[in-house]
Image (cartoon, rainbow, N blue to C red):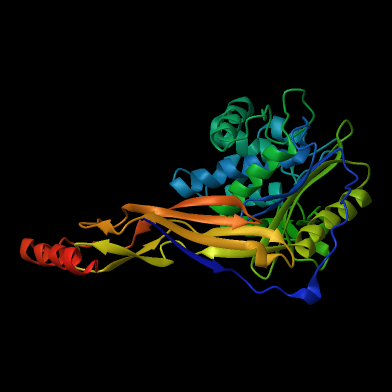
Length: 383
């Protein structure tokens, strides 16, 4: 038989119902995602090819963070600055103003990249890790492919204009999501508003973060701006409000002001028009299902991951969850054995289906107990 347990999630608040106007973002391409549910809330030409400019530096940082996490690199390691890296501290490039022959720590280089957007710091880090920037770019592209950035190629570490350094806002979103999920401690650095570089042989230099959203009271904590004459202005941004995170990426903004205004608009749209609903906690029992011929009459089941869904505000009454299994399930049952499915339905449409795992072992009754149980069932029909 099919056992179904239905329950409603959340309480409908009729007083806060919203009308949903069409959102128009003045950018060539843009995308918005609810981080925990992974659901896309808005997109505009999200797979159009872009030149990512300094948003490239997110991947440059990720390569270093991955190596630090694996123990192959330390924040205290120092790299010697080459002439190639130094040259990008001149001629109007964004830089942290390192000098040829300087020995600069990985930590300082990363802050120079993340906060000051230093192109010179990018090359120094790339050369220190991979020997040459070209070899480092191969590492960047390889990592991009591993995390699903299928329409991206990196040809340098800084994002300086190059025809083979390209991506999409959807791919930049995937990269940003990876950064936040896999390196939460380092991600905090992206909210730093200024960085002071105690440079060799000169007075300290303090530079501010170029992300305009950090200076607004909207909960922004990252991520990275970009600008190229051919691409105009771009921004990968994220806000967190009451434990809920949104990530937006836009490119082709006409001005700095437009970049700030339109990025704020898309993030605000996500906060005010949608709710995030937690369906389950990973490995926390969500229901019990019946067991046949086991030492326990029921077994608790759970999903193996947190499950979230994003829905329009004031529409929670349309969200339903069902536990589905063919049972009772005959013992023995092993912990983590798949016993059924959790189905999430919104407005009569299945929007998610997830395996349900046993949270414990259930041993089989001994032969005498099984015989008595079976006879009881035959006589009384009582499982």
